Image 1 (cartoon, rainbow, N blue to C red):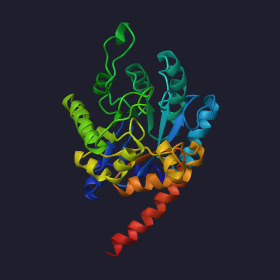
Image 2: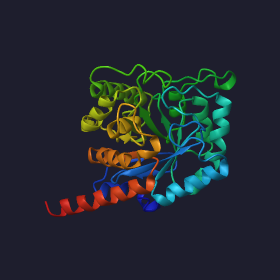
Image 3: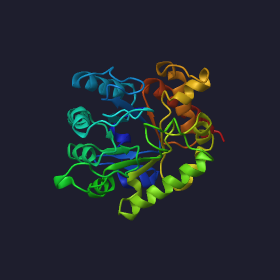
Image 4: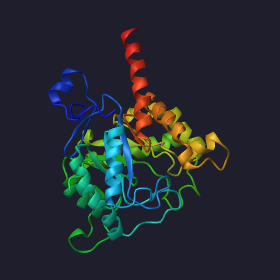
Length: 315
């Protein structure tokens, strides 16, 4: 999928002339979403649910970044705190120590760099280090924990003070420690739609341009298996919000349950199912898919694109 800088940084006039309006404004890049984009997962946390600890140390993490780009990732998403079900918060200083050195090096790789965090302090430091995107499971609802100059600063404040950074706003029911023990009830699609609308409106009310915002339904974050698949089946309903969708099915436990039994299969055995889910999400309108398996996902998207080309050429 990584087809060069020309597909990532497109002059506005060129986009308009080609009838493309799907642009994600980020710090250094205006990402053309006319074609689906792959966000490669880079875990700097040792306890992430799938590949935690597999890329220990800055050198190994950078090698993983380069490998993901080579396999077709258009964006890298760096996270220093696991948000798997039951995970505990990481102290601020520890998350900064995990994330900041990697961000400083990754911004040299020529692709947009996203930082997966909900802490305003980490957001601010990462953006100052050159990061392009903030990917927040809490949808920019947290306030800073530290005293001093950052006291009272919220995640929304940080986003408003960095006028071009990209933002991914996600729905989560509950919090990581309890979300799967007490998942949401009722119609998840309606609830997710209402939440994402409210958060988008909160951002735009602070003067944040809509083209900076993508929305994530939060697959696996406080939903039952049936609710996760309902969000996939009815994903087009979320397009009514008018924002691009970023969807992350990669190696999620709902896939394991569908593949095996109530216990689910091991995360590393869900690669094929993850690719299928990503492609189904794209078919239903997602513009970015967040994945561990970039190479297989890129191949699947190319096959889908070849089919779509023939379909459109011979209506």
